[in-house]
Length: 291
Ligand code: GUN
Image 1 (cartoon, rainbow, N blue to C red):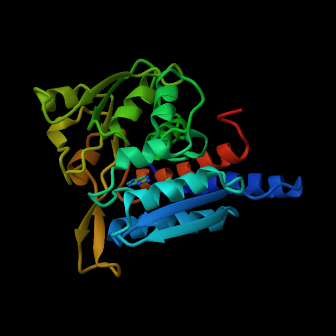
Image 2: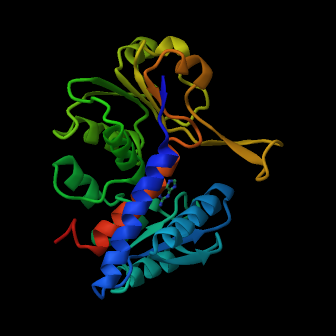
């Protein structure tokens, strides 16, 4: 069994990005600039946004953090999005989700200029991805495909089962995995899938993205399968400094014995998600998606 080291690969990609930034600056250009809007004080969102800002610093990007309390109105937020859409000094921005219940996430996402939508959540980017046009692809699917590529894991003609159909992970990943560059045969399994254990056991590549800790057990995995764990459920812990730890969707000890490759949690998909946002921001700065 080979443990897929997402942290190491993400570190390599960060180095490549930092080198590109140096080149851009040498040629008289500005460093890529990413902004993040954070509403409220949700612990998970605070952590993820602080990572995004730190990642920018590490590769030499400029970053901006715009904060609102959770009583911000939808109108105020939409006005800020409009301002960022028109800010020529900004290559991309994200609105960290979830948003408070009184604000329509869909409305906010649709108000973002697709050319600056480095999260790849706008329907225009999703649609472009589906038909194989250049697009910003959401960070986790982008990172998973990159991880498989860099580990030279054979995907062509393989059965790929994705458990979970979220707009951020499962659904876009199912499109990427079936595209010509990857050529997998894809099944999207979900809460109404019949015979889930057998469906999963048929997978050469099994991707768990449901957000239920330890959901994928040893009996759901074929000998020699590649297992990718997207789960990042925060569990309270008195053993860590932060007071919590991350739990994956895969029961690691049981599953690791059976598979050829597996991603750990943490240190697998998570670092790749983070670096993909940097990759999208660089692509935007270089006008490589929308020319
Ligand atoms: N919340 C959880 N993941 C994400 C993400 O990738 N982008 C944004 N904007 N919010 C999130």
